[in-house]
Image (cartoon, rainbow over all chains, first blue to last red; front, side, top):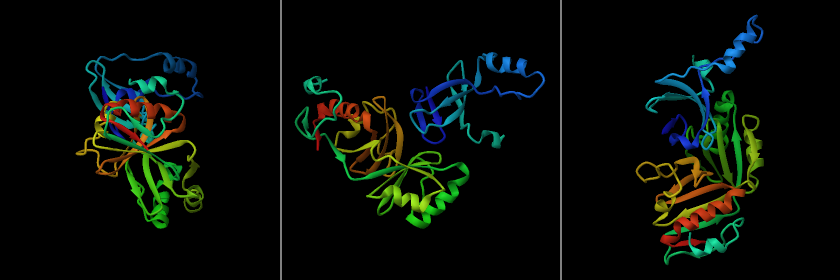
Length: 90
Length: 193
């Protein structure tokens, strides 16, 4: 499996460290239901068969965190973008 | 692995000599006397840093994994907002006086070892350890890459079409890198100078 790093270009997946689900967002710790929301944030994950967003770090290349869209059934890489600045681009 | 490496201490960089088959399929030269520094700029300072490099060094900082070379300094793109700088004596001070505080500057001269690699069988040799395409049709002079060779993290760039590749290897991995190189180039004949 190869991942298209936005800086380095196509690289073997061995150059990357895998973290996991890129879709979860850290809840507001001041919210009234924060404990329940944090439980879900820490423990609950979807396990989709098909396109999924994941965090990968290009640890042997540019050392940047990427959000990678990957089809879990075929390993097709649909897209990859830097996580840094993603909030501003949304 | 050919005999020599089974006897040679694994913690030492392989010394100058001829190894493996007759001939010079690969020639490796340790480069001394260049100072190295890392540059890192926060996203909101990158344009300022670019402007200073243009004004003071006459160089456009590469936006990708490429090399920009001037008379006494060169910059290699290693990541977004991050570069390696190489130059003569006093490099860190020269960079600091002209580019600080647009970038964080840190001397790396004792952290990285430089090797120039060339020879008619060099690409065949590197193919044994590299997972990226360095064919002359896609990896051109001035192109750079930060990747792993034989699982050793390196940054390298192509200086000319001869081809001469310059490798920057973390100091403590230089013995392992030199063993990979000599073992892989032995069938083509390897000259270390």
